[in-house]
Image (cartoon, rainbow, N blue to C red; front, side, top):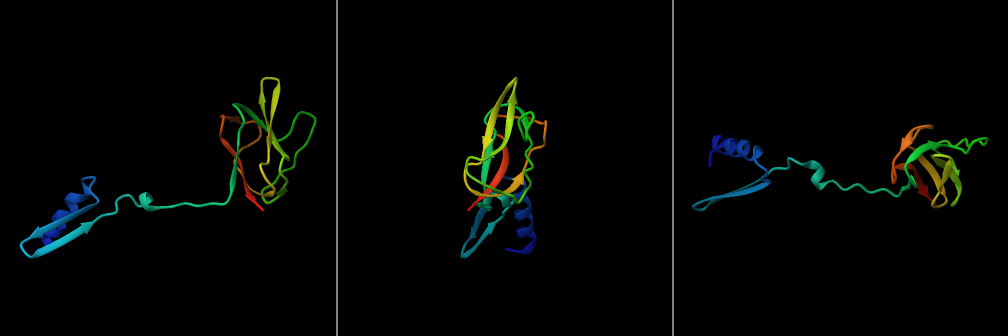
Length: 125
């Protein structure tokens, strides 16, 4: 098989969802494999635990009249209140699931949140 035919075959493969093709002609054999979807083979692993919103509502770092000075990199203890979700006149607590370091705060004060939305990420100790 010549380079011109290989080029045509490769370009054709890029227009399809094929990832691999084997071509046989008599005693000659060639296999082509394209990886058009690199994330297909990507594995992401993390030891961080997400802390999810318990309901829909408005996120607050602290209940009215209280303060909460959380910063990324701070140590947290299991059960420590990280913030609250305001639902009407009710406040649903968001507690740390384990002891560890608060690595990521992914929400801002006063922003609406969805049920199950990740608000914090903690690296357990």
